[in-house]
Length: 349
Ligand code: AMP
Ligand code: MG
Image (cartoon, rainbow, N blue to C red; front, side, top):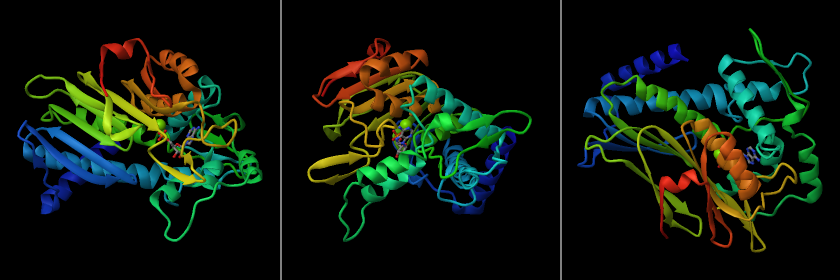
């Protein structure tokens, strides 16, 4: 990992020295603002650092995210480790894993068990069948209709975290049954932000930063004036509004999962992108949005997805197990949160 970080920092410096580095907008408070596309979503970065350092860092982050997507996480690109793992499904030898992937999958399998199966990275076949991401992005001239019950049932036979076997050792291997597909969409952004947090630590001249990637946000360090970070939580009933503001100091990861993020509609019903592994259908736990606060991006991202499926009763217990705070916005507008969350949030619609 360390070697990789050194390589990206070097590559990014080369890119910037060549004069093609992106310039950030100076916002007058000491931070520079950048917006870009990464991992198929928007990345916004506010960096508190001298101009040249900030410009170089965002290139570093961009190179790192491109590497993650291309070489590690993407199920679409045949250059990635996940692609290689998926292609190995059903084979007797399984698939050799990088140390980083073995660690990530180990964490995912633990989360699967701890969430009573709600969080499941082996749902690839069902996720592809629904293809809510594709429909949400828009398909010219086509009308969405949900898959048949039979098709959902069939896809589910290729899913189930309890069916994979991760053997860890000097060379870790993963064994998956035929037809199974990994989909790390529920943890990719949080995992990436955790990596960016490590990159930030290597830059002494960066005093603070806030980076948002899809549904996850990383806060790091502090502002020059010492005031805290303020992060708003989207109101699922009006995404231009917020249900409250988190006041935070130092490094945190805040992840949100919601039925408003990616969905397709048919017959007046909203089919969103978070599937209940027990049914193969979009989760229907009476939750519209969940926000999780944790020091670890992988944990916040995975738990926001899991808690969306589990609902408040089980979700609060799961978050407590991981030392994370959680806030639920329910379909009737009620807000349910962990006790610890109360000390960070100022609720107000
Ligand atoms: P998030 O927006 O972080 O909640 O992640 C949602 C994405 O994770 C979906 O677009 C799918 O790719 C994937 N996914 C859907 N349902 C699940 C689930 N129950 N467990 C793990 N990943 C899921
Ligand atoms: Mg998630």
